[in-house]
Amino acid sequence: MEDQERVRHLPPDLVEAFVDRMHRMVEEAVDRMKTSAGPVPVILVGGGSILIHRPLRGVSRVVRPPHHEVANAVGAAIAQISGTVDRVYNLEEMSRSEALEHARREAVERAVAAGARRETVEVVDVEDVPLAYLPSNALRVRVKAVGELDLGAAR
Image (tube, rainbow, N blue to C red):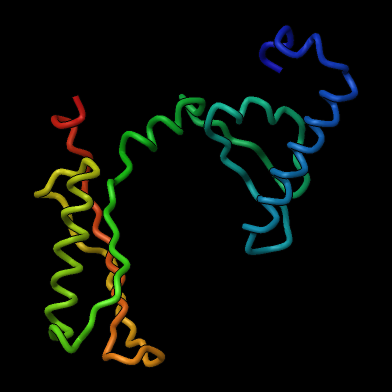
């Protein structure tokens, strides 16, 4: 481990049990993702990747790319900002197309309010389902819009 001083006060059997469990969890995750029974290469990234220091069952080799320890921060920095709407519309008050357009606009506005640059926001998912079990002509609409982080507004 990188800095054993941080765990020196803990009972060694407790630390060992934790490390064993952590390795098993990674092995189980790899096994769930595999598309064949044979060993596969695994790329480990993020701050916790340094804790995986033993061979892993089902893994042919472990790859840690340059700067692997900051991959989480890079992912957060390039992640898109989203806005979602999940709403039921009464189609006796508006048409289906009006309901969909309203939900689209609202999802875009929510993405912008969450920090997305308006000119980069696009609707990426639209789902509408008639709700036959309600007495009125109801339509459930779910819309997701995503865009790039507005770094100017984040200051």
